[in-house]
Length: 259
Image (cartoon, rainbow, N blue to C red; front, side, top):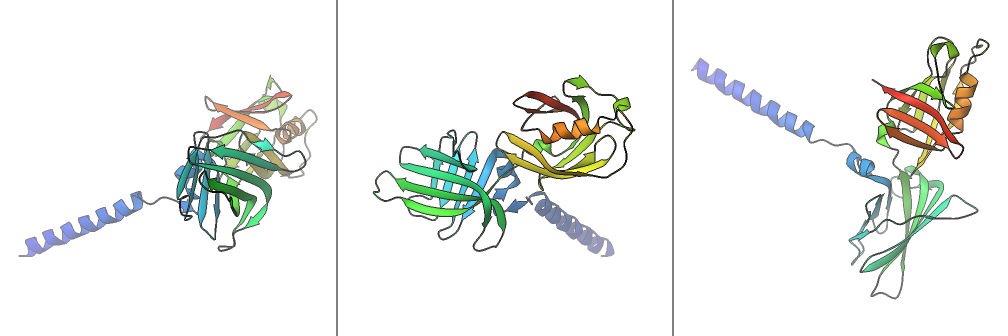
């Protein structure tokens, strides 16, 4: 009898552990803008209230969902943005077989009317089905999803077209650690510790609000040249574990990914 009871107890423990494991493995981080998978696939996401709606913009599709009758889910082909001359405003005019929409994204703080969460972009949408005479106007808040591939530690290999060496700096090569979920970075500039913020939009990357400690650097140290190049960055590419930072003038910095 004791052996039978012991066996039943062990079986119950194993089943309980399996259930817990299954629940844990299926857990996925989500926010009001969607899941982590959404943030990897879509470069911009937005939501709005009264009525509830959602927007996901990617390189392959633009998806609008809502509680508006006849507009529960609309899929559009991506188009290039129309940029305003006097403000950081982008407009997208999209259409499919049944509907048309104008999506306007403005870089200005936007507060969700229900959650109170502050987002960096205000979104306005004018949308209608082809059978309708009037356009439905709705508004909400959104954000760009920073490229998850940037989330790593990068050590400098090239500066302004030339390979760098430890002797160009104080004691080791400059490095940056990018936190893509918080749009921040920190690291070592070649003499001082540095940190700052990351500004990301589709195909645009800037390192701003750069601050550093105030340690005196040896003559010939290239930290100043490095931080200047970092702050002049506007675009990037990632290939073969290398992060290349550039601007319209050309390639500025090349980093190697390290674990």
